Length: 265
Ligand SMILES: C[S@@+](CC[C@H](N)C(=O)[O-])C[C@H]1O[C@@H](n2cnc3c(N)ncnc32)[C@H](O)[C@@H]1O
Image (tube, rainbow, N blue to C red):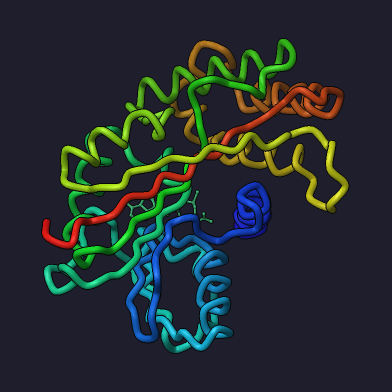
């Protein structure tokens, strides 16, 4: 899991021109940053290091509802804690200059996005920025054959049943504006799944492993009328792997959504 998250991190950062963030936030020494759903901490460690090298030491709070992926050793200015973005403490209000949250699309059903946004708005300092990075899950550009078509049906049904937001770039901006965020902007990048780029990142394998990670949820959902056992799901995934390896047309899309809390909310 940690390895997959770290490879996916490389892919996403590369897709966005090697930038760790797109928000035009001007961080100063001592500024506080909140990383929601920190996972393995790969993003936060690189972000902190990039700023330390520019003599901008940051204090970063990393929260996650699971400790499983937390790194074992971190600089003393980075604090990891077991906490949900839906439950941030009152003393964090108006406290952070920047909030970052990536790849929680399959963790936050629609109503919880509203709750998470309200919490983030509360903890941001006036003038502070939030940045979300999410995988698009509505128009499936990874469908290049019968197996990947079936996988897309499973995914559509799972997203519908769990009330996940497949198109955060469409859904979130109006909600955010209504909540008081300003300067809401989105930028999307199509990332090829097939091995068209020789950079050592096995994109097909990363994508395959991601879907393997959904196996438990998909089987718990009864295979969504498409597969009826673990073996069938695994064989479907191997079929997808073949299709992706043999096509240059398979893509996935990542979206970055940025917004600012106004100076006078
Ligand atoms: C797909 S991982 C992404 C990890 C990391 N953001 C990255 O991009 O590498 C999603 C993470 O969000 C965490 N998560 C899920 N629901 C959460 C919540 N309500 N609050 C905070 N973290 C949450 C999960 O435990 C998991 O570590």
